[in-house]
Length: 452
Image 1 (tube, rainbow, N blue to C red):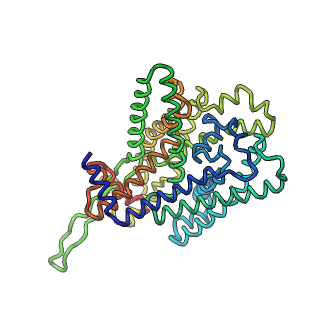
Image 2: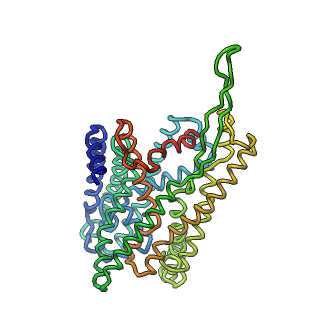
Image 3: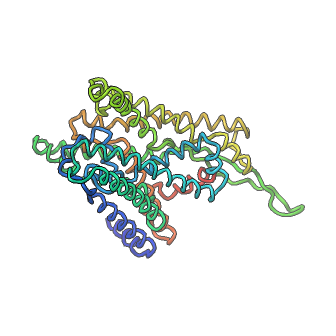
């Protein structure tokens, strides 16, 4: 405990780190404050009985926005339109030559163009999603009838778009002047904001049922799940590489010296949370299509409801299969064995026992396929853990934190933020947060992958 307090003291002593942390906390407070400022013309009390609970798509959005969605706040859409735009641009980078060139060959200028395009696409997506959100509010009877419909729509579309752009700007400011990835932190703080209420609800449920020990066992199980998720996020398969010999000295005194040794870190879960996001979006698609083309009665059919209920057996099995499939697909898009082989050739390096060129690419592809299999199984299990938790009688709001997108985002963002704090401490020759852990070596492990 004393060592932990000393570490916190060292963090406070570093002026730059202290300013960055305080700046980050200030921005996060501003973002949370905006989650409670209600849109003009909306009756918040009419949304209390809305259908956006933790078991549907709207409930998932509400969790990511920290309750701003149900509050009809100016940050009701949160940073989600920006995330959607980023995903679209990333996928286009795999399929459209223009975006491939911007991402891979034009360096900093290409990244600036991609950022600008992403921002413009964010505005367009916000306008579309904002219209859908206002339609949802009207369907709940939460609009003041004394306000003209045209004024209500025009004003709130502008406000929602401004709120998303402001949230995007706040996230970028955290990345530039704060600590951690700003966009990810905004999502994380929204998820964490719903945790205390879920925790209290579960505790009350267990106490009223006369089994407080069960609540303690649930916390132990949650801790174990978090630890396994940390292993999954940080897990890598190190492929050793050897750089060719080089001559040291001149003339007759020149002598060959063995090249340096390093490794290529292939992540067990290279796809991150994307497979779960795609799988969940696809599972909600049948109800949306049925509602559009066949009306509310078709969307309310038992088969459709079984599919869209993330805690049903059918939905859990299909989600697991989809996550496994999407993990393979997304990893194949991200990890390019030919690119690795070309990089090693340019650096005059090789994998011991493997010939350069196509054999190297085939070897890396084989290793990637093997580790992706286990990675996809684990991420598939994490995706359906909330359903398993609900099956054991855990409250739905609390069960969300046992897995799925929420847990993976929380773990990944916390580890990334700790790694940045760790770097500041080590640069000033202080002990890191985790002296015997793997946070210190993470930046080195990612060196080769980041340079490609």
